[in-house]
Length: 460
Image (cartoon, rainbow, N blue to C red; front, side, top):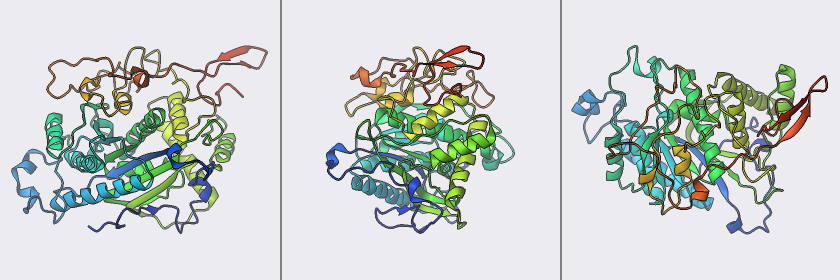
C-alpha cells in the first residue's frame, strides 16, 4: 500500500479545511522570534498504527503466505509484519525521525501494544530514532478484547509471551527496552466503545506523564485506538479509515515562562446549558496544538467553527461519562492535556483515589512515569514491577485490582519494587501543591478546599 505522503512532510489536518479553525490548531501564545531556538522546547505526542500484518489479503511473509505457516496455527491472532509491512514500518520510522529533526526535538519513549506486529513496528522506529529512545509495552494499548475483533468465542492464546516479544525487539537492534509490561489485564467481552475508552484513558495518562517529565512519546497501537485518540485532539476531523502505518502527530511549543501559559480546559458543571456555555468559551481559545497526519482518510463533511467545538464538547462529555477513573481524575488528566501552568510549575496534586491516599499511592511508583523520568544513562533493569492496587483505576469488572496483571522483568525470578536510579529528585512524584482556598456555601457554612483543579466544583 502506498503511503499518503512521501518524505518527511506530514499533511496538516487543518489545510484546505474550513471546519478546522486556526484558533484550535495554532499556538495560543506566539513565540517571539527574538527567543533563540535553543530556549524553545516542543512537546510531541504521536499515535501510530502498526504496519501491514502478515495475514492481510495477498500479503506475503518471507516470500510465502503466512496463513499456511505453523506460526499462524499457533498464534492466529498475533501475526508478525508482512514483507511489505517491514518496508512500511521503515518508511514510518523515517517519516517520524525527519519530522522530529525538523522540530529540533526527538521522541524519548515509544509505547507499544504487546501484539507482535505493534512491537516490530515500534522496534523499527526505535532503531531509527537512536539508542537513547526507550521502548515500553502497555496492555492498555492492545487490541479490543471482544467479539468485534476475535469472534464469538474467547481465544485460548491472544498474543505471544512477553519475553519472546522482547527478544524479537532486541534482535532488531533495540537496546533500551523496559523489562516490565505495564497496564491492566484485559477482560473478555470488551466492546468497541469500551476499547476506545480504555485507550483514551491510557493516552491521556501518557500526555500527563510527558507534560510532567518534559518527554515526547509515540504510541504504536491499532486502528481503532488511532481513531479514538483523534477525538481528543483539538481541530481533528472525523476519521473514515486508518491505513497500516498511519500516524497522528500532535505538537505544541512548551511555555517559556509563567506569562506564556497555554489555555485551559474548563471544568464541567451540572447544568447542561451552563456546561456547554463554559466549555465552548474555553475551547474558543487556542489549545496550543497543531495536528499533522499521514496515511489517514478523513470524512469530507465540512463543519463550522461552532460545529467543531460542539463536537469536541460532546466527545469530552462522552469520555467523562464512560470513564472508570472517576470525575476528579478525568478532570485532572484533561487539565494536563490542556497544559495549564499558570498556577505553579507543575500540574497540581492528583485527586484522591477511593482506594488509596493519593492517585499515585502512598508508597507506590508508577512504572510508566518511572520510565518517562529516566535519563540516557539510567538502568532500566531497576524498573518497578507493580504499583498498589487501585492506585490509578477504580475497581471494575474490566480492571479489578485482583485481576490486575503483574508482569515480572524478563529473566527475573521474583518481582520487587526497587528504588529509582540516579537523579531521584526527577523520578519522585511531586508533592501535593494544592490550591487551598476557603469557600462560602449557602447559609454561611465555610468549606475549605484543597482541590488541585483550576476551578473547584464547589466554587460556584
